[in-house]
Image (cartoon, rainbow, N blue to C red; front, side, top):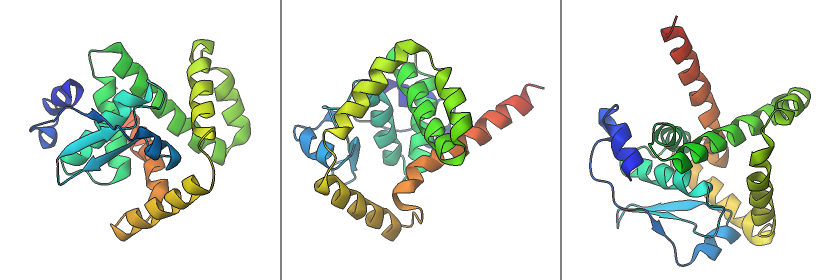
Length: 189
């Protein structure tokens, strides 16, 4: 909540009330659906899956709070979540934002150029490995028919609501991140 409020000082469109994000009592249902969080517009709630790895929570909470400000496109909500975490005072939020951005970015790199991905992957600080491994084990334990069907439903839901990339729209955050970093670099020249 504070991370989003702090970011709103820089970006006027993010100003306004932010409710405290809530851990869902039924988090296991989200786990089976491969969902980290959900925004409930009728109750103005940002909810997160409390069973996932702790480093996911700050990023997810900020993502869901972004929807509250009207940023319904998933790539935009992911990007805003990254910015909120990056500029947060709390180190756990910064870690969450940077690690999630790294994961999205390296997933895109893996699909584009596996050899370059291997090189980048080998450069990751080993202290991060336990978090990545625990995250993979957690989500792998919920893979199955339910997660497949839930993914198809979410994909259709997003497409019906104007996000033509469906569930792939979450990954488009990388495009925004690259543009943002390029703009930053050009501005520092």
